[in-house]
Image (cartoon, rainbow, N blue to C red; front, side, top):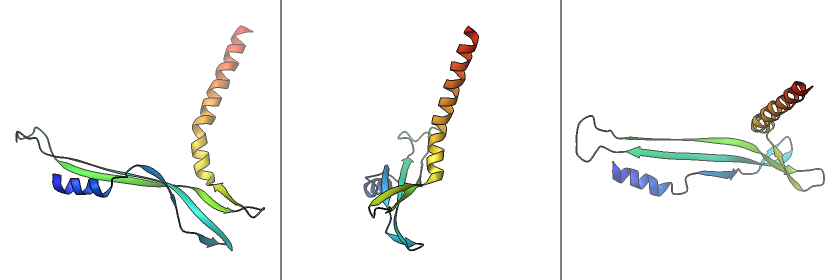
Length: 115
């Protein structure tokens, strides 16, 4: 088990989060280059050294995800520009909007309690 896990670790030395650029594709007559965040990882375990039953276990697993950030495409001036994925941008901004809303509510309550 440890030998196979070791070879798996050697294979995926650069595990983590990175950007991925896809090959250029034509969509509606426009050339675009997709951009995504890619993350994956693996883990494993082994049996205890003393061999006591019920004292531990072994196993392994892994997982990953790809989050499409947007595309690079030619803008009106002919220069390449980044166009973000609107859904990802909205999801990323949701915590910020919530924090601003809570802050404004707190300010309004403080002003109201003084008056």
